[in-house]
Length: 163
Image (tube, rainbow, N blue to C red; front, side, top):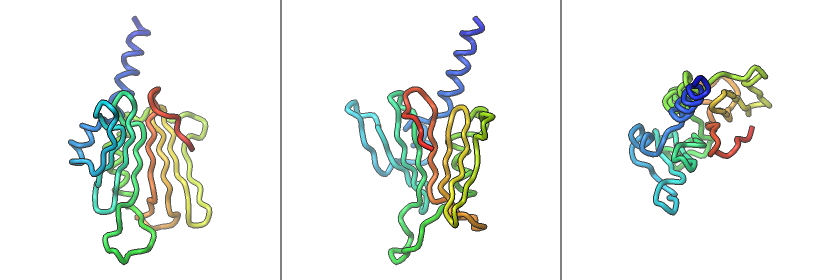
């Protein structure tokens, strides 16, 4: 009985973390690009969360998100050729919506988060029991430092994440 209860609890914990296409459409509106499976359900899709934040989602066979990638949207002005960055504050708010801190699970004790900067380019990662989050950042004091953020959900149906 105790084992069954633990299994059910673990199942509820992991399945409520990853979102479905329907969940994301309720949160962010219609998707801008859908790649369907043979049965018509989305294999992947994209959402424009704001003028400068695009979300690409790949789904597992259970129809829940396996990989979410946040990237800067297209430049506001065609003549803008500089590096496009996203607000770290806004990315944190979105991460709390798609992978709430209280559902990410425990951090392993093996130094499961960190930041490394090599000049102006850096990586900041957080490894939890249920999700791995990698931030590609521009190191420095600028609050708009996010170049790309990947959220990998750790479920059997999802591909293994790359550090």
